Length: 220
Image 1 (cartoon, rainbow, N blue to C red):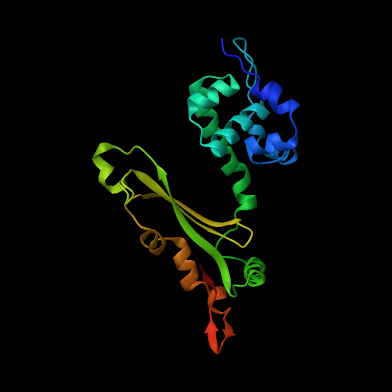
Image 2 (tube, rainbow, N blue to C red):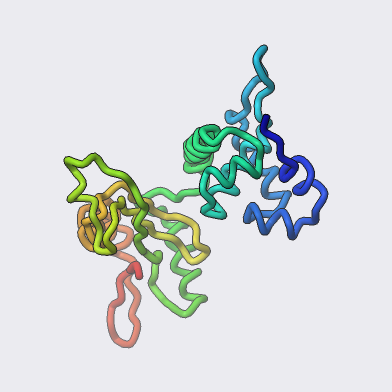
């Protein structure tokens, strides 16, 4: 018998600051996101009522935003511990399917995208910049036969997320899945991003003279 008042009572009775603290977005953005993810809706059955769409999205956002363990999240929301895991995976998959085409810019960049990014970084004080790149290790449990490849310099097993964002922190490029043993330069050298930066005619032709030097478009 699982019971919880966190979502049904606390989140509905408290103010917007309480909501944003726990879910990392305001209520308006939350409802907008739910509107994009209608495929997460589940129908009621003869056995039980389905978890509502808004609650499913809330469970996923809370799990991602708090880094809370599943056993903490399932007690807060009054659902099964395996349900938290399932909802999180379904949420991430649906976010990618529904929003990636709209919110992740495509490579190679269009002239308008290039101008927007370069002008944005220029206003921040760094001219001729397309985006900022960095990597992040995500912990995994690899197959024992492949474990050596995934053992990173920090001493644990991971895959690497390498991403490029524009001046507003919007994703331009995402590369995920490289074994944790690989460093950022290795992943970049094998990526589509490097080929675009070196071979795209639009980028190659968008140089600007700065301090008597022809400065190409770059990433930092």
